Length: 139
Image 1 (cartoon, rainbow, N blue to C red):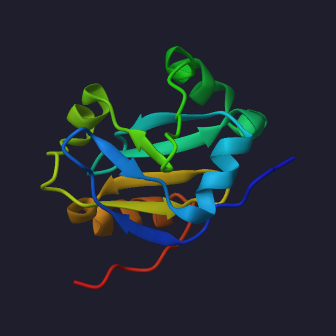
Image 2: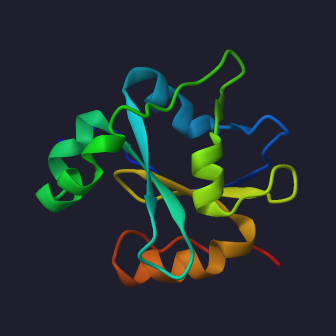
C-alpha cells in the first residue's frame, strides 16, 4: 500500500550550513514516516531519491540490498521544516553551498532532489524510466 503520493516541482536554495527547506506538501509525510535518501547515479547527473520506510515493499529486492547500508540516514526536519544535506550527500551531488539552487520533484511514491542546473537531464532520465514526467523548469 502506498501511503503518500508525491507530485510537483519546487525550487529551493541551500544555506551555508547545508540546510534546505522541504516543500510544504512533503513536510507532513516526513513528519509522519521515516524517509531516507539514496543517491541515484544511473543517469547523466546524480540526484537524490528520497524514499519512505512505509513504501519499502514497492522497491525491488536488488535496490534494497544495494542500499541497505543507507537506511539509517533518516531525513529529519528542524523546527523550521528544513533538513541538512550532509557533506557526503553534497559531494555526491557536486553541490556547492549557496551557489546551486536545488529542485525537489515528485516521483509518485518517492520524491527527488537535484541541482537546478541538472534538472532537465534528470527529468529526461526519470521520464525515460517511467518514474514521472514532471514539467520543465522555466529558463
